[in-house]
Length: 324
Ligand SMILES: [Zn+2]
Image 1 (cartoon, rainbow, N blue to C red):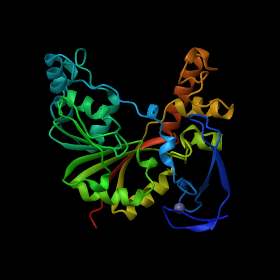
Image 2: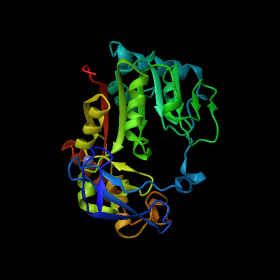
Image 3: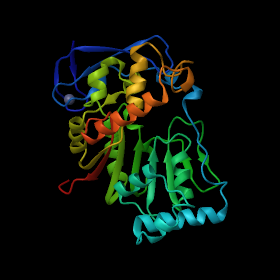
Image 4: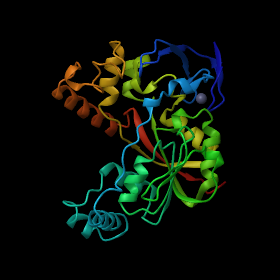
């Protein structure tokens, strides 16, 4: 069948991949193809009825730090400021009493964010990450997610609007998309909107699955992060760069952050165990086929893949190109 790539426009005969839905195990398959020019793996046609693939139990609403004692919030805020823009002395001194999760710290550093930064999290569900950031002393935090039931006003000041990126206005010092971009049917328009909303010199942090990876090569249609039909675009590192450039961005940094999930999840799919099944590691570790030692070995395998730039997900940092 001939398909046109929605990322680079290349049109050619492509082999079809028939990918089963395996998060809930609904027993349907969806057609994907991979562009030979840019490497982007993509769904052949976005289903018209996507809402049924996001049942009410899909979204998690993790609690924030609003119920923490004021003194602990104060210490966390002081530590965060020291780490991001100070000497680092308080960062070290306060580390035993005030947590600053390493992944959040990396994302903030990749965006060059400080506590004064105006941050936007797109596709953030209930806003769990933003509420953690509020607990770290950030004050200008907005979330946007068109699929939540209604706009949320959290007690810590975090607002999550029931809105698409295209509906937002204003200016932000950092925009984040944590595994939401691959769910969006119009990736070019999304990047163009992000560019419109970013302050000069500000960064967009895109965390997405990557198909130019060991896990996709090893597992093919059983690769867990294919997540048919919710993931429309599984970028290669190259196709993400192509898309970014088209939208007036340059990729300034790529940090691979894949985990053991890529291997145990894919191994389960290969054996017909869907993610929410009673014997899935995600549901009941003891009932699963994996021991703690197995998982530790897969974590090590993931770290090695990340070090080679071969993990199945990464953080891409995009900045507006100077020339456009
Ligand atoms: Zn392409």
